[in-house]
Image (tube, each protein chain N blue to C red):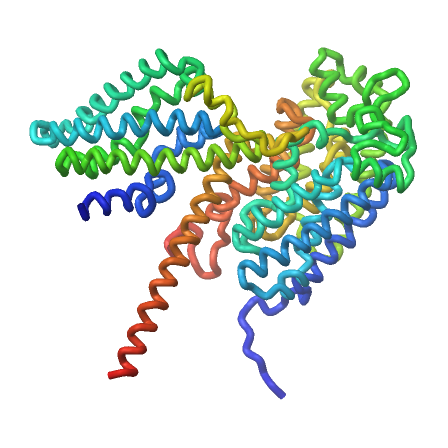
Length: 357
Length: 229
C-alpha cells in the first residue's frame, strides 16, 4: 500500500482539461440545436469548417514549435474555440470568413502566445473581432429567424450559399434577408438600436416584425438554450457562478435602472438578457478559464466589468452587440484585477498581502 | 573602415531603431498603410537623421551639457522644417497624405536618441554614416511593414508611387490580386501592431538561429582540437 504525499488542495475536481472542454461542447448542444432550428443548417457547416481548420492549424503550429502534437490535440481546447467562433458568426457567412477567423484565433491568439493556457485574450472572441472589423458586411448579415424568413433554405442550398455566396437559384445573402416589402431584416438588437437612433420610442421599435413578446423572434429561444447549457455547466461544476452572475448583474442592473428612468428610449433588462450573445457570452465565453481572472472576487469583478461594458457599448456604441469587445477589454484588465483581488493567505494580515512580493 | 562597418551593421540589423530599439513607433505604425507612404516618411526621416547627426556632431564642442537636449531639438526641428517645406513644394499630395506625421518627425525618439547617444560624442563623418545607416534601417522596416500591410489589405504594391516619385512611377504599381473584400484589419492600426510583432519575431528567430549556428561551430572545432592534441 502506498501513501502518496500530495500538495493542497486535497479535495479537487478529478476532471481533466479535455473532459472540462468536452463538457463545454456538450452544454452548447441545446443552443446549437435551437440556432439550427431558427437560423437554418448553416451553423453545422460553420462548425464543421471551423473544427477542421482549427485542428489542422493547431497541428501545424504544434509541430513547428516542436511540442507533443498528441497532447495538444487531445485537450479539446481547439474544439471549444472553433465551435464558439462558428456559432457566433452568421450561419450563412461565406466559408473564407470562418477559415480566416479560426486561423487567427488558433495561430495568432493562441499558439503565438504559447499555446494552451498561455493566451491572454479569449481566442474565439479575438477571432470574432478580427472578422467583425475586417468584414463588417458579412459579419452582420444574419437572416431573419425561420418563422418570419422569406425563404426556406435546405441543406444543399445552405451549403451552396456558404461556398459560392449565393443560392442555387441565384439569390445572395442580402436578397435572402429582404422581405416582400423590400426592407432587409435586421437582428433585434440592430433593429431596435436603429429605430431608437431615428428618434422612435421603444414601443414603436418593438413593433418591428422581428420582435416577439420578450425579445427577438428566435433570439429569445436561442438565449434560453444557452442559459440551459450554462445551467448544465454550473451543475457539473465545470464553471463557477461568479462570472455569469457578475456578467448578468453588470448588464441587467444598469439596463433596469436606465429603463426605469427613461422607459421610452432605454430597452429593459429582459430585452438585453435575451438578445444577441448575452447568455452565450455569460456562460460560455467569459468563463474561459485561461483568459479570465483567477480568484473568486476577481471573477465576480471580471464578469461585472464585461456586463457593464456590454451595456455601455450596446447603448451608445457603434456596433449592435458588444460581447466580443467587452470580453477582450476585460481580458486586458485581468492582471490588474488579479493583483488587487489576491486572496489573503491564512495567517497573514489583510494589509500585509502585498508584502510577499 | 572598421568603424564604418560596425556602424552599418548596427544601424541596419543589430541595433535597428525600429526592430531593436523600438523607437519612433508612432509614425512607424501610423503611416505604413502603403509602401508609398512608408517610403515617403522613411526618406524624410533619413534626411533629418543625417542632417541632425552631422550638425550635432559639428557643434558638440560648444553645446553646454546642461542645455544639450533643447539644442538638439532645435537642430532637429530646423531640419524637419526644411523637409516639410520641400515636400510641400515638390510632392504636395504625399505631403497631404502624411499630414501631421511630417512635423511629428521632431518628436521621433530615434533621431534625438542618435543625437544624444552617438553624434554628440563622435566626429562628424562617423555621425553622418551613423545617421545614414540608422535612417536606412528605419526606412527599410517602414517599407517592409508598409508592403506587408498594403498586400494584405489592398492586394497591391506601390499603389500611388507617382505621388512620391513622379509620373513614371505609375508603372511601378503591381496588382498582386484583387479582393472583393479586403482585409481591413491590415490597413487599420491593429494590423500595424500585429505586423510589427511578426517582423520583430522573425528577426529574433533569425538571430537565434545564427547564434545557434555559431555556437555549434565553436564546440565542434574545440572538440576536434582536444581530440587531436
